[in-house]
Amino acid sequence: MKFDSRDPAVLKDPYPIYAELRASGGLSRGGPGQWVVSRYDDVAPLLRDRRLSHEYPPEYHEFSTGEGPAQTFFQRILLDRDAPDHTRLRRLMAQAFSPRLLQRMHDYIERQVDLLLRPALDRGSFDAVTELAFPLPVTVVCELVGIPAVDRDLVRPHAIDLAKAFALYVAEEDRAAAHGAVAWLREYIGELLRERRASLGEDLLSRMIVAEDAEEPGARLTAEEIVDNTVFLFFAGFETTTNLIATSVAALLDHPGQTARLRQDPGLLPSAVEEFLRYDAPIQATARLVREPVEVGGRTVRPGRVLVLLLGSANHDERRFADPGRLDVGRAPNPHLSFGGGAHHCLGANLARVEGQAAIGWLLRHAPALKAAGDIVRRPSVTFRSYRSVPVALR
Image (cartoon, rainbow, N blue to C red; front, side, top):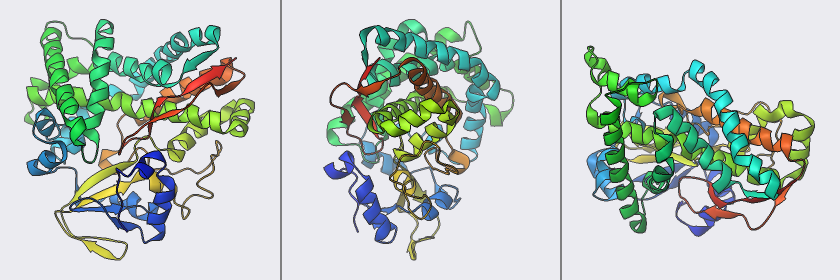
């Protein structure tokens, strides 16, 4: 069976097609040189398989994004590096998500949610995307990285365009915007770094500047690595969480019984966020380059091929999850794969959970009634499950 990630039916609702892929054997044909993996018991171990690589040759990026700044961007960032470069970059960037720092950010996040949603109570309505799901994680990641508050509205539109570069294959009509976003953000972060050198703080930018001058060769960063990985962290810090919050609110609107259950038992909030992550995964797929022969579904995939791992399909595999098409805010256990796995497990997973719980918890505490206030509009994307608009009426 062939899987076309750009098929309008997939963009609208991929889950019935995922079910067909799993039923057909779990390994499907994708784009040129690609094989698509859809079953949980295949996807989960492949996320940790060292025979698969995150590093792609320059020709792959040229094919995927076209010539331009995004092509070299993907050759430097944490996401597309293997050890030892990945280990070196991850060790430094993990400092931005330390338990101590997350604890400090908890109250800040709660305050930001209240600032964003308090006006909605007076109006009786809000858009869960433009007034909550997008501004909250952007504000939080700007605080972590060290982007000044006065610049945040300036940076946001370029962050939206940068998301286009992370598709498995960037459509021709999106390439100029993707390259333009990388170029603009590189210039902005580069200027910010020059200013920050004169006044170091506790933010990630300051820590990366220190790493540039580290005495140990294995701990050093180049100027290009600092700029591109800061741009990547800025993007990664909001995209997944934006989608998590938007899909969570949409799920609450669509499942009033589960919403009522969650109101009656607020202790279910952590498991509810895990279920929102499973039910409509913010990131639907990730890809790996095959370095050594790998057997999947009774077939051997040769080196040089790309394996597309469908996280969204694995999360709905009936062999692993009972009644996977049903939203269950108390589901346990819930071993979803929405944050990936292995050495590349999402660095910001716990931060996303904190933000998701803060946003949903506020709505449950302060708005006794939630319902859709208009048409919910998806943002078509090959890689992400996201929305343009989720209008909500509340009381």
